[in-house]
Length: 238
Image (tube, rainbow, N blue to C red):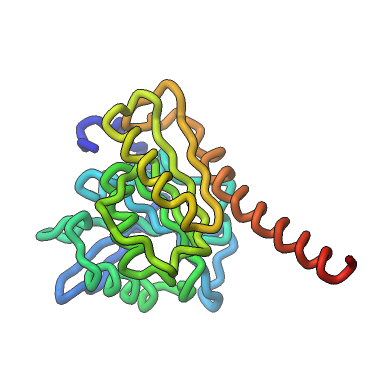
């Protein structure tokens, strides 16, 4: 994702996304954050952790918030957009870096221990697999728009994950990697779906309606609840 390819982000959008700082391994790391509408700092919230791709810059955090983030769904989540520190890209983070990032965010913000979801695009979709390998218990699942595995072993802790793999029909460099990830994961996670967005290349424009993507992910959650309810009724009333 080259930043020059992105359109201008309106000032009102930038104003709506707060930029905060935390300590990470002795240096400053910034992150964008958007709180729920009825936010109560005394409560704990899961995070929709948005990995923006490219060089994970502040400008990309603004664009991801503007064009790739849900507005209607995920209302009960704190949305967070990590920005690469000055001397190291998020794409180069090792397990310890990711674990310290999670701990730092939980120290700074009223975040739950688990139940988080990752939304990652491009390099952010690559980093998604690094993050779930480093801190698998933190997440219930993830969305990549698109993403690619880097040969990570399949962890037992992923067995209850919900996964949505998204790719664009004209994004020829990422179609095969998305399908390969689906093939590796389909018998290893609890729920998985793969979806092609027709007519677009690697970067979605701000005019694209992203909401159905997130609703599709939530559909995996609802499917799980329905299956659990069916098994409960079958066990107790058969």
